[in-house]
Length: 226
Image 1: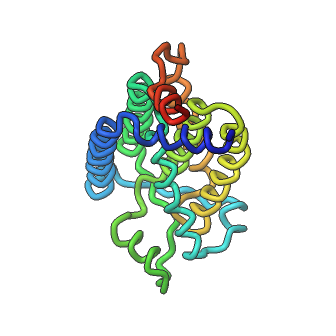
Image 2: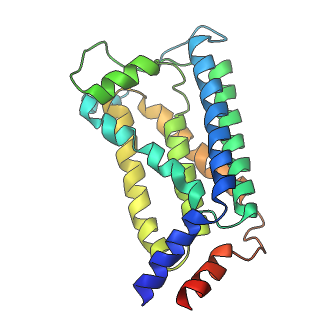
């Protein structure tokens, strides 16, 4: 019965406010991609490069890790777990802060990543190379988005589901962090500022939370139980 209630709650989270979530997701995707790729292809200043650290040299180049690297987009579905308009508003504010800060850094201090010129037989990696240049390296928005998504999910969930996420999400983010180094999309020094940016964005957006709104999912569960 408890498992049924838990599954029902998760289903209700995905269904509630689905139209608003869809519109918000499309809007954020379009705005983010437009700014991200515009800065990549039309840099404001001449990009610089960092020296490789001992950690950068220790992680070998492996295009196969691109599948883990791209899994961050699954984490970005965290907005669909929001239950109220207040939570969605907070998600938007945090995402906007993260994006604006990251793009400002890319404009004022463009850094080119350490990606090698080696070819690969991995189709996912080849697709990544075609649409993503080596710019927009510092701070790592990949890690910022991963950390932000994880913090949001943990902030808006409760119970045993939340306890499992507290264990699994840091592990997932660690693997994504390694993948950024293995695919040579980022330097080691890009990662900590990216994680800090994601955590700060969530912290600022979720101040004075929780919301006083009644989660619509509560009514959904009551109807399901009845």
